[in-house]
Image (cartoon, rainbow, N blue to C red; front, side):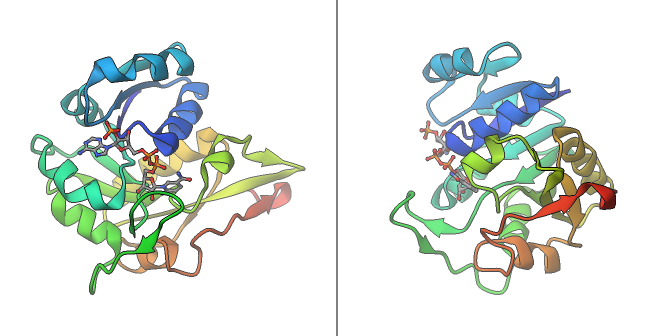
Length: 204
Ligand SMILES: NC(=O)c1ccc[n+]([C@@H]2O[C@H](COP(=O)([O-])OP(=O)(O)OC[C@H]3O[C@@H](n4cnc5c(N)ncnc54)[C@H](OP(=O)(O)O)[C@@H]3O)[C@@H](O)[C@H]2O)c1
């Protein structure tokens, strides 16, 4: 499968490594265009491609990994969504690493806000609780699998992402819809920044 990334920074590259290792092709994009991504795709190796945002967003599954402050302008700059699955990996912080301040998103989960800004996309919240080193690391550690949480309003999209993340090697835990599950897993929620493992005998 071809998977697109909107954003090609640390988090998107870590996601791309997992996807490439699982046999997918990945079209990475950023705000500056494919030429600026040559080094990154060369480093990622075969299967990684530098793309425009439009090309990345046209993939069946698209991973959103841009700073929170850039989410509205990024989503506004994309063509109309046509049922692609949009995995929301963002966390609602203002600023860059080291200067983080939590963002106020009112009475929404952050992924509900993402979904409102991307009509026609099937949004699944996933992977935002993992750090870059944890996302890059082997999900299988000492007889246990790292847990990946997912939430979505669209059950079909959620199932597709569950299958993808299980193939990456994770034990996947479904937290429900974008509202309830999103609030649990997003930054500020009880699972934010937590890193769980499930022992082998209880794999599903
Ligand atoms: N780093 C982590 O450990 C981690 C963990 C969990 C979740 N996250 C979340 O993942 C997101 C990205 O984090 P990061 O650490 O990867 O940040 P980063 O290294 O600063 O990368 C941000 C990426 O977003 C791109 N971007 C910004 N505005 C854009 C636009 N309008 N259109 C297309 N691309 C745009 C940037 O491209 P240009 O340089 O061309 O603008 C860059 O490739 C954040 O929401 C963060 O909270 C990060």
